[in-house]
Amino acid sequence: MASISKEITIGCSADEVWKVIGDFATGPSRMAPGYVVDTRIEADTRVVTFIDGAVARERLVALDHEVRRIVYAVVGDSLQPAHDNASMQVLADGEDHCRLIWIHDVLPDDLAPTLDAAMTHGGTVIKRTFEERHSQQAAAS
Image 1 (spheres, one colour):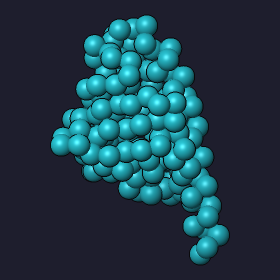
Image 2 (cartoon, helix red, strand yellow; image 1 turned 180 degrees about the horizontal axis):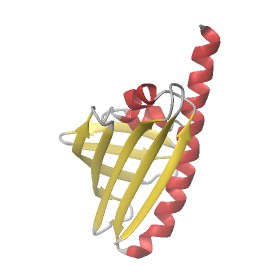
Image 3 (cartoon, rainbow, N blue to C red; image 1 turned 45 degrees about the vertical axis):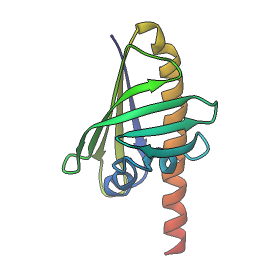
């Protein structure tokens, strides 16, 4: 099983980032607008549509607000993996910085390069989104 891990340093408080990451229903659209074009809930599944037309159906596995960690399993998407599980955890790194640890496990292994590229791009969008929003809020204060 391939395991892809990304650590993203974000210039915002962990609480600010967790408010979005920890929102299973709307988090993807709020953390990566433009990259994620739609997020909706259907029964017990989150349906995430990406800019390239890929659609992922994700089921919530665990949500722990105390440690700021969410785990979800992809139960259907355009790539049709045999296994696809991911977690995101937000760790404080001072008052105005945090680290987002994003881990994705997938089978078959040959899906890893595509997933790695998507996570790299998505991580860039996530970082930019939070930091721009934080700057705008600071300027308005």
